[in-house]
Picture 1: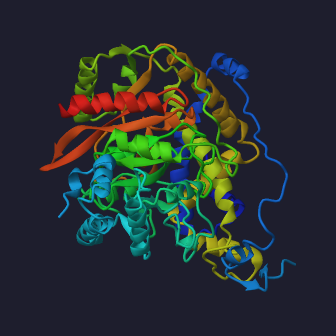
Picture 2 (picture 1 turned 30 degrees about the horizontal axis):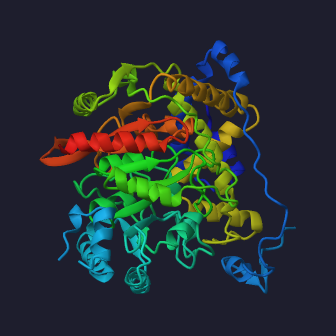
Picture 3 (picture 1 turned 180 degrees about the horizontal axis):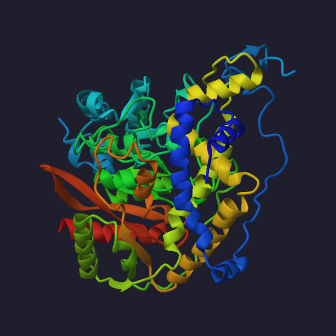
Length: 95
Length: 473
């Protein structure tokens, strides 16, 4: 159901480096978990039809106003970054 | 010396305001216990360094007659709840050195009453686990049998209370992470209705399932802590005012006997049946109920939860906070930081979640799971027209041995079989201590679980107190 290439692809999509040994164990484990959870596909179509009229969630909104003073959290937030320059979070060149 | 083993919130409060003991004497008794037991149990991964100031503040409140019931009460906090200025890591290497820039809403609410925040407790990394074995800070042991797990993911919080290292604790529950460790430690654990307690400042695991809740020794203590925390919060838009569906009191308990037929330990089943008899003595009628789609609960949980995990974990990239491992370029930094920062279970769930959300599989897994979730919600609503609460064991077996399930993720997931439904259908659920079973000369606690309709924590407290009374009679 899941082959080695799928696992490597998932690791890439997840932005996680993966090595040979781990790809092997993840392949086995994820296949076993997917085999178990696949049973949700057996739910009857009758039961599915029932679900159509379930109550929809409601949005909760607040006033679009400024709730903090400018700069109030700058030091705490930027200070948490591994690298900074002034009040900016520093990253490597993207291009 | 205060006998802290017999205290509850009311007795402690009474002792403090009547000056039978001071806050310092009280907290010193707990700290002494922590010093003796924590090196082995590892319930706490940090004892806060401002306890003296907290004691002074609480004592001042008491002396000035401004104490509330939680003033001076020692409380343990799970390592995924933010306290401003204190380290917090979800027991993950990826948040190494991270200091919380603000208070979680639950902490802000508690501060007004000046309890004593003792320290942060160990947990499964990012709350992903049922045994507190996936923490970067090592395992936590069960105080009832040190060869066994305390449950998880709030295993540190439960062990802290059960070893008398705090009177009460906060945990978080996504699929059973408060109730299962409470059960393994002989404690009360409450997973409130979704939206009843603000999660602002709780590190998100699976946002449509997560709730913060109390771990305590008595139902009354759980009620006190719950009342202190509940309420709407502009900073968590999922919090809602209770829409209580008024139901006539039926004095009826529904038990889905058919799901107990397989996979439940014989002694757990025996204890469960004894609990049922006690409840009959308390005046309740027991009815056999069927939850038609309950067999899908765990499957759908292990689709929705990893899907939300994969999304919530995306923020840990080595740029904004915590660990950074250099990989040579921006994108390579992500890959190596996330490989080094996340433990194996977290990485497994991120990848699993990525799979069920990916194009081509979305409808078959995530889409389908959402439909089943709606169906289950309706099933529960129908059942609650006939019964006040639904009763099950909290777990299929007592605390298992350290290492017993770490090699088989699916076996670990099966721990959640009775607890996940409450998170899926967003109803409140409580685990109560129901007795002990002997294993290799050790007495291991067991628990039973009640689920009630949305916003009806009051029913859980009421029935819980009656059960406690029958149990202690």
